[in-house]
Length: 96
Image 1 (tube, one colour):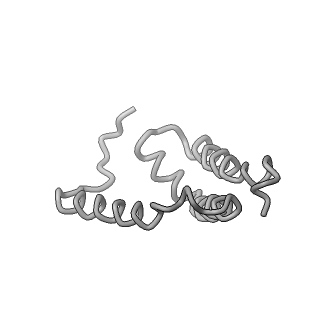
Image 2 (cartoon, helix red, strand yellow):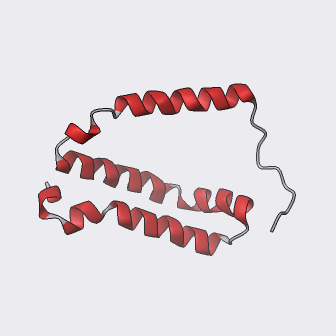
């Protein structure tokens, strides 16, 4: 369902800036495969904590974009953060 609402205008310069930031973040994590498993699990746990802290905001933005409803989308954030925690819960090697 398209409400016709514009969430934000993005310029080509904005897109270039976002791509540069993503490339920098990617370079920072280039050695991720060499990290000990527990460190990778900690990273996933930290990402999940940030997503949880902003679940309402994320659901609100996603609802503006998709009209799926904040209840359903908040549930999706929760499911995602639960999955990010699986390495610590499932594989004893990752439990650190």
